[in-house]
Length: 189
Image (cartoon, one colour):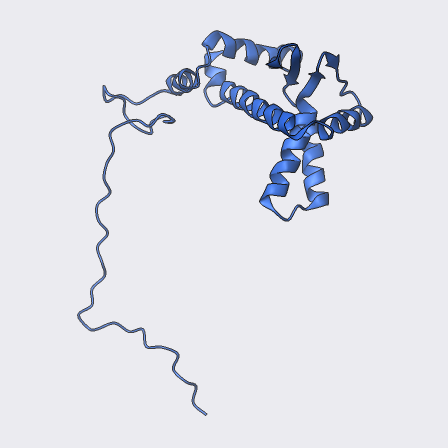
């Protein structure tokens, strides 16, 4: 029994391959330009140091503040920042330790969230608990797993809008710290 033909995909005899159009060259350097990615207005390429400083300027981070953050992490092992919500209500965020990342990774592997929304919420909750070192004037300990569990209880009992505000502020804090430790930081400090 002969097999049925599924399709005849042969072209005609005079069918020639298509030619791709030549790519357009953009001479403007994007805001997040990397070394050698694009020439500046003078035609020179940006160095790692120049790209780093331009990124800090774009993010409105003063070079002295960046140096203070960098030095704080190197000397004390962390950088922390106060966040005022209203009146005397404030939080203190601290850079997370690698063990916090490992804890989060373990929880994600164990819980296996099915939705991206669930995974994002889990990451936000754990990062907030790991970074929150003071809430409403009360210092929060992070020395043991039991201490972390206590901070997690505080985080999960926050009113939804406050959790959202703190999450947004933590995102700004993390973005600032990551910008300070971006490529080129070593050459600047």
